[in-house]
Length: 279
Image 1 (cartoon, helix red, strand yellow):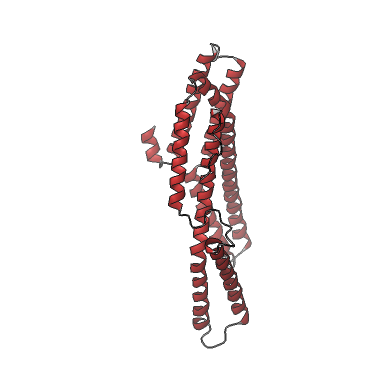
Image 2 (cartoon, rainbow, N blue to C red):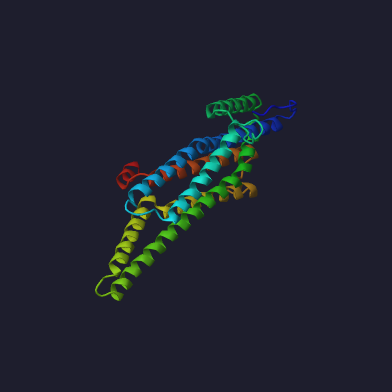
């Protein structure tokens, strides 16, 4: 856990340092999870590969010798896993080759450090809470990042929707083409089954996850927030009052838009009957 060498005189700098400490601990927890998973998972995988090697040699080639290629493939995989296991054990337990920052530290300990760091940040922020007008001004300055996030998610769901639609189009057209090309169906029967499976799965996934609706809602929320932000900067309706009133109205409006967005996401996650009950 990071220690501060000197007490910052500026409250903003102190809050930034606390924030950096929290983010650092979050990343360390992720890294430690990967380290523990590799430390214990690699030997288990090595044992599974070795067992598969033995069983394959004894049951698949009972009356003949196992091909050399099979032995070579299993040997290479086992050697790589054994090398990875040795490196991870050295990184975890060897003093000289200690390259892991949190070796020997439990994830529970790191989580506790994270909770304490967040608590210190909250207490520091609470003890030096700025005036409401300053908080509202800071809130406005953070909105461009929120708008960018909404637009990014909207583009993601739009691409997913287009990909699904193209899969449906191509598979549906291919079914007709393969049916017309092969008469009798063999060997096109397997192709027809695969194409029909793709159409069914993609159509069902599109109806369940609704990427088009999600993209539309995200884009609409981002546009609305950006519209209100521009109106506030230009001092046009509905933000034609004094600064304090405008910032208060702006924060309330944006939070209402975000709440509506979350409600629409929850409605999309529910079955059709559940959506009707919510509405």
